[in-house]
Length: 226
Image (cartoon, rainbow, N blue to C red; front, side, top):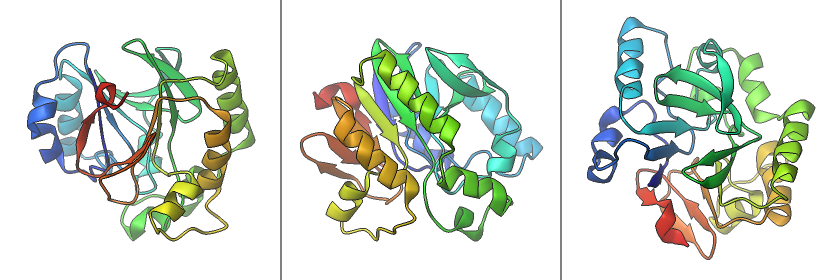
């Protein structure tokens, strides 16, 4: 089972949701950005991360715009299920953008990061580091194309923080010419064959038929959206 949810912003109460509590060994929860649990590097925070990592199911996330990227980058990266991930603790890991992962037999293209005020003015993160997550690098874009080409630009799910700009416009959200991740994702929207696309950012729970879902605090079974 693959469940998908939106921004958590450091609130572990989401993990008490009855749908998430039903997950078992080998199941997966994917968070569409702004996990917010890697924030200050404190002992308390590390205990929370270890506790989550000991859960039987996988907890996977793409980065949002409001993360402490300096702290996040202290964790090691490693190959995982066909892509590159950042291991946080046990079964808790970040899906690095541009990778395609095979999760429970499904191909998942992950592309986190996006535009926004630098960490909402909250996280103790340098502006220089945060800016890198607003503007994808050429190597990241090349790696994404390589990963997608491996599967003939056909995947089951796309998981992002930022929506393609056309989806943001449909939701009547402010779109800027500097929304580089959203603009990039709009190009990919036309290039990729996919079953469903999930994104966070806008704190909305809204399906956009036939293939998009904006998520905030809702929890969705991806398999039921075919």
